[in-house]
Length: 351
Image (cartoon, rainbow, N blue to C red; front, side):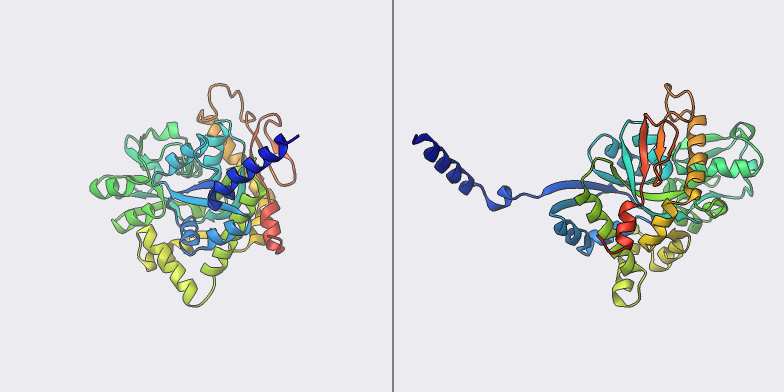
């Protein structure tokens, strides 16, 4: 009869010896990001304490990590090292989705409206690339942009007969600068760097508006606490950087600095980034038919290049779910989900 009180006392004493920060440790989450004009706001949110503020609101801890190699950041997310990662719509489909990771596009931050482009030393059209080397991050949105440029020229990649050279986004600007015959397909900030190095931009993403989407992607089974904290932090940051006054100016200056750009250059990049500064605009786009049209283009491109793997017999291999609950592709293999739920909550002041 005396064992229970003794055991209870022992338990109380054991708990009392645990440091308070361990006894009440917050659930921890890791988010990866890489340099791109539309993703620099994440580091500002981290720097300014905005991310921590929202994490605290939901009783969690969020660690934001810069991974300088964009594709590697997505590979690490797919491998389970991160709970969320910034990436484009196409890369969300071709890497984590193909890798069997059920992911949700939590935030549609922007679409590239000139932030991705093809730079040359003199060629005026993709039709002049026959027999030449073209540097890019192969099978990324840069490859997609190149393919769309070739489509619009009425040709196919086979017609052109160019040689694709796979180069990381961290290296491409330097390689372009050192090669007098270079052709490069890339995104900002490297695109701005090669432009300043004398590149002629012969095609950019403003020719395919709304097709290259920049997202914050999280694991679908991530808790609401993480999803709401990221949403809250993002839209507070959007209000800051799109506002007026000292704080807005300081946010732009900080983002320019971490991107390795001048303020003038960074502001120029923002002009070619169609930012969804308000949650309502982003949520409305998520529910639009334009998103479905874009993903039809993207899944066709990826399947035709074998990016769904050897087991895929058609572009329906992977299912893509939209906010209206419709599924494009396999309903039994849904791996990429677009939602307006949390963006809509933010728009309605419910985060």
